[in-house]
Length: 84
Image 1: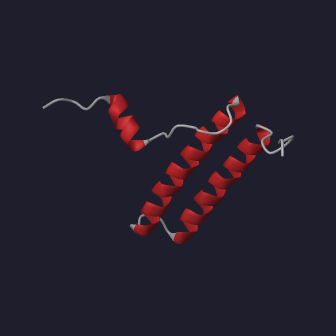
Image 2: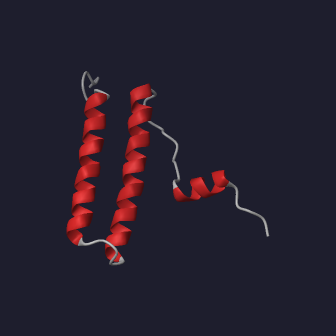
């Protein structure tokens, strides 16, 4: 039996989608952060649904992740000086 490739396992556990928006480095970074946020939320909700996390623990973890994402957006200065 063959060993699964580490890269294949990472691609399965942490899938990444292409970015189709306006090309700017800060947009790419935020998109990667947003995808990571989404993946972690999925894990947390699955653990809560499966009874491995309480509702309060899940809420606190999601709240902390949201604050991180919000901080990331602020640090990247997204949403400022946007062309209308």
